[in-house]
Image (cartoon, rainbow, N blue to C red; front, side, top):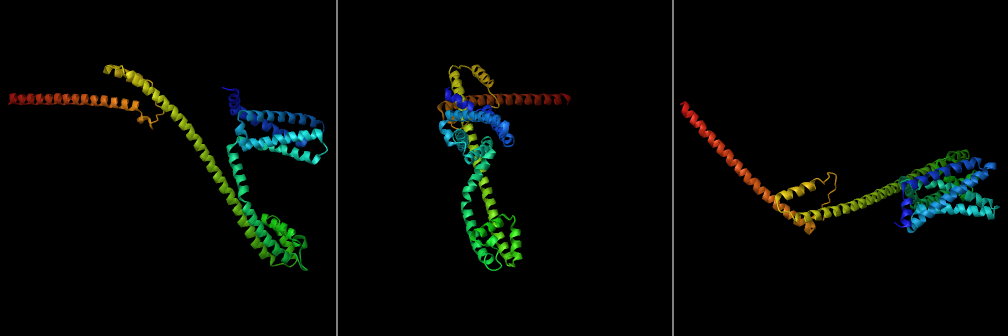
Length: 360
């Protein structure tokens, strides 16, 4: 094996995955402790530990990139890990060069929490759910646009009915932006009763019809549509995962099948080579007994394409010939046995007749 193959074997081993998983878990605990105790005298300790974790993540990324350069850039989870790693290095560089950029440093420091998301790469079920959610985000774009269009129409209606006039509620409906924000509260169905209460206080009793229609349209209908899209994408992601597992299982079965066929062809060829020097029935029985001692009941037997080889046909023809000869011998033995039985019966009848004659 080459050194790259050796590194690839290490990267794909269970021990390596378990080590990285434990490393991520310890880093998550460190980030939690850093949030509470990272100030003051402990800041140096947490900074050194964070540097150590960063070095270990770098070694992991280098090993994966060296073992499988093409596959490393094709896998989305590996690209995500590289992004988190690069943000950590950018934060380190900014801390050394321009420490006065506190806002950017805080943003980059907050991005360290994305390391906890690396747990997704170690759970296939989490990967399926994440893929379904990402697909949902791309699928609901048209649904969100339709919701915004309906909200725009209701915002215009609300502005003219509740945002103008002597009894207007300018705080909630005075402008188009305020009307849209109020309708967004109604879409979430959280706190809309406060807005409705202000409208009732100002004498807008017809606003209840407006509220019912908007809640039914933009809350119940669109929320159910969102849920249906999520469920559909989750089912599709699960079906794709099952199909992926089936392909892997079929590939493994095909590989094992090919290996079994190759072994059977070798055994068959060896049997044919041994049968060329056989001269008597005793030699055939001995060869078959020896071969039977090597058989296993749990051994797979592949039958496809095996009967199309010349060696198999020759062996099958010779086996049929031996079977025919054996059947003829058995028929002859059966005839002899029947004749013997018939002669015994006839002799007993004669003896019985003689005994009856003597008694009479």
